[in-house]
Image (cartoon, rainbow, N blue to C red; front, side, top):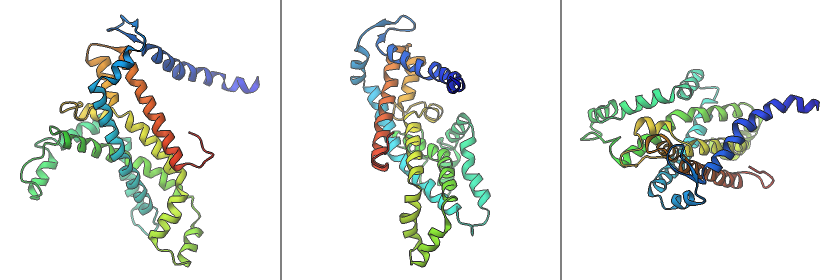
Length: 285
């Protein structure tokens, strides 16, 4: 009873704000109708889900961000952490702070700035034109391909420093004698990176990979504020589609709840894969 008295309030709050909404959303996914006029419709929403081209377009876009952006961000964060862990590097504190700062900036503020930077007459196009790298401005926000590239650049810019801090803190806890012994044995820096650094950081790499996967599958703010899902749903994500179904189109909360459970399934699926690939046999997600 003493133990329960310490955790009962926290357990109640978790059930109230986590599990209860999840159960209610699942029940809601079996209802159809506009606004609050919802009636039980069985599996109609799930059947509609598989036949909805906009949903599959949002899934394709989200998975594209996941497959391209997450590996690039993880590798970049890992390399930066190794460089910034070198004691011979001057101004290490400055570089660490500068790379981490994007993580603490407002999502809306930095999205608006990126929208301005990548506009047709934005700074980036002017710079590329002045350097004679391009002959005409790139349609960063109006072309489907370049719009996706813009979103990927924005996400990578903001979250690389976040993952870098995890790697950097872990590297500082690695016994330096391991690297010294490797040097004595004639191991090059390249060999030390793959034979010592990566194996020692394996749990952190797994953690950041799973968290980055979850964040990318739930991607909303950048797409909403930079491209609004355009052009022609070319950058639409699952989370933004849920928002559109709930607040932009005629409110269809039942179907929006159904789509939200697609995110749950994707997160569980990719998390299990990552644990199986990177985890030990005895580890469980």
